Amino acid sequence: MKSRRRTVSLVALGLLAIALGWRLRPSAPPAQAQEARQAGQPGQGGQARRGGGSIEPLLAEGYTVAMVTVRETVPTLGTLLPNESVNVVAESSRRVVGVHFEEGNLIQRGALLFKLDDAALRADLMRLEGRHALAVANEARLASLGAQQLVSQQDYDRAVSELKAIVGEMEVLKVAIAQTSIRAPFTGRVGLRRVSQGAYVNTNTVLTTLQDVSQLKLDFTLPERYAAEVHRGQVFKFSVEGRGGSYSGRVVALEPGIDTNTRSLVVRGVVPNPGGQLTPGASASVLFEVGTVNGILIPSRALVPSIKGHSVFVLRDGKSVEQDVTIGVRTADNVQILSGLAQGDVVLTSNLLRLRAGIPVRLEARAAQLAQP
Image (cartoon, rainbow, N blue to C red; front, side):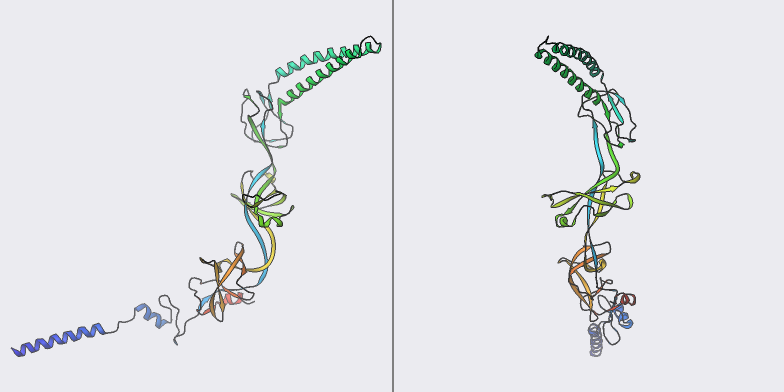
């Protein structure tokens, strides 16, 4: 009995010792880290280490900073306007008796667009013409009698005054009759007809529109700090949504003052429009060059935005250094650096997500050539 108890105790002690030994044994490293050590590659979140334990340099492209000519271009929005534009209206309240154009056609200056009823005006003119003939005869008769001292000067003056009054009334009627013929004030393209023949119109009724689109105006605004850089005759570039390519315009006028609400200057340019390719009312994206300066340009992809502003990674003594910078003008691919970099600095432009301050960096072969001053 004692021998059996002793055997059970020995077995229990043995199992306890095995369990304690398993728990206290050091855990094996993860397979991924073990393979990384063997291959000399970085594990999770670290740089690769060589056989001797040094950190493997990170490959990156670089760009050597140099002074270049920076063209300061201001992007802004503008609106295309017709060279001339008018709403065609009647000058008196009358009935439309004739429409003499086709919608959308090119109309020459002076062409008849609408004819209004002038029958009553012509009847009044005929009545005045009868009075005019009588007044002329009366004036001639009194002039003859006055020469013989048979009538007073007062009677003659009254006859002359009546004749002039009739002539004036006739001229007024002739003008009113002429106004019933509504003509194009300039050469342009006529719009849609708003009224039909037989409609009664007044001076507030828009009959149609007429626009000169042989050339267009382009109005846009610039911030007030560029007001001194804008002059008549300057050329600018712009593009229009839905129209491929770029167009050119020329500044012809400036507002004499700055808008106090927007703190901007309104600029007007003229744009050639051969073939009527551009449409009035369209929005235009304007690129206005306000000057050129010597400065530093770096690729935009090298810029690292942050809450504090912007920074770049610079290669110094084989290691990356994060450098805060102040940016200026942006172009499609580059950005101007106002402060923070000096001529000859090598800015790292690739592998930015893995770059950290102080880690070793080696320029790639192609980038190393580009980075030569």
